[in-house]
Length: 419
Image (cartoon, rainbow, N blue to C red; front, side):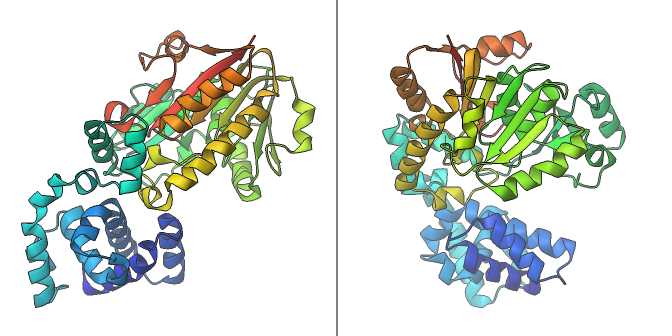
């Protein structure tokens, strides 16, 4: 890192480390303002900023209130988060900095003595996980599994290609990639090539989507000619996967409260060659317009708003932007959305409830409450649904994906059927 890059990194960290806004949004906005920064500059700055967030507990242990000392925070992130040797920092660190960084390196062994620094998790999250039944070994395993960045997963659009042929073509180009271990549609890249201008991305053959998210779409079991609803569609990754499962037939409603997210779905629909998707913005889960779908859907997917703690590899700042209070508010919202979505399902229809959280209070507890309050619903065994699709993955009746065991983001899913 050169002095100019360090200066920009510190400027970004001064904002990011307050955790008032999502870190990726802060970084993107900064790069839009600083148009003269080159590609390598942006890479060095972004990598160091996110290293500082991922290793925030260690940085805070040696540097209280790091957002007020962003230059030093950047230097510590280089040493602790990116394993840069002190000798390589001679051009950017003065004598006082070097003495400070030498002291930081000397204290590295202390970090394993505290669960916060060893797992790189804030105290509120450790307390919440303990209350949800995680022992300290499980907390540590989770923290260590998400401290590294995620690989790049893509889904092959089955309307436009077969995974084996697409994979062979990508490998022939010299790209380091392999099939995902569980999803029949997924390809995983060892590094993160820029695919947004690749011909297979531009023609809709490839969509960026984590393997766990692909499996959520698969659990819906949606088929040709059916009516389906993606109740919290967002930008539509799972919507597109469901549309491909339906072979572009039937009707698939993509509902969301955010107009901007649905607007992002529309060009993706065109690129994927799907004409059976109907995006619709709703005011809330109680929007009267949803009533026209009551009791008509063969399948409803609810990828509920959640803490996002299963995605910390991609969004490490979430562990600082969420709290026990925000999780409690999300639980109330999840319950309300699940009840509203269930009304759309016809008899013998399927309801899939999913989150990208690892907390039982957002997952199993929500399903137990729903089943207790709604007679006439039965859980379907996820392992049997996966086995029917020739997927060897057994996490019990519910799908429970975690990064350490499965290499995907952390996901939960329950499949319910209306009797």
